[in-house]
Length: 184
Image 1 (cartoon, rainbow, N blue to C red):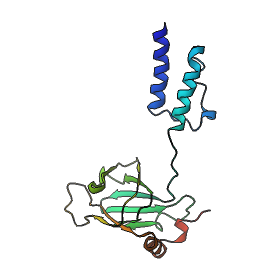
Image 2 (cartoon, rainbow, N blue to C red; image 1 turned 60 degrees about the vertical axis):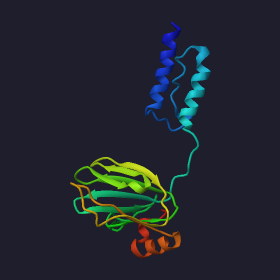
Image 3 (spheres, one colour; image 1 turned 30 degrees about the horizontal axis):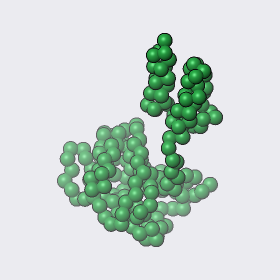
Image 4 (cartoon, rainbow, N blue to C red; image 1 turned 180 degrees about the vertical axis):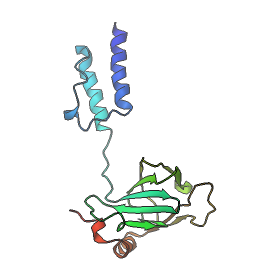
C-alpha cells in the first residue's frame, strides 16, 4: 500500500518536473491534498521548490526575433511596450548586439527548418516555422560568424556584430525608430 502512495507522489514530482508550470504557489491547485497526511508537508515543500524554479534572473530588456528566410536572416528588434510595425523594427544581414549585455534571442523560420549557429559560443538554435526557440545570450565585443560562408543546403550563414554599449546605442538610434522601443 505504501508503495502505491510513493508512486503517486513520485508521479506528482515527475509531472511537475516535466513541464507542468504553475505561475505561483498561491495559484497552484492543491495537488498535495490527495496524499496521505504524513506526506502532505513534504509534497507541499517539493511543490514550492518546483514552482520557485531556483533563483530568478531578471529578464533582458531587449528581445530580438531572428527569422530564417530564403534570402537569409532577418532580425526584429523589440522591447516590451514597443509599438513599431514589423517593417520598422527589422534589420537584415548581420545581427547587431551590445557587448556583455544579456539579450533574449528568439529564433524561428518562415519556410523550412533553418539552423542559427555560432559554434565558437556554443550557440546552436533551430528556426522552425510556427515555433520559437529562446535563448538568453551575452556575447563579448567583436564580430563573429561568416556572412560569406558557403551555405550547406538551406542553411543561411549567421553574422553578428557586437558593439560597445555606447556604440550600440548610437547604431540603434540611427537604424531603428523610437517606436520599436516605446515604453508605453
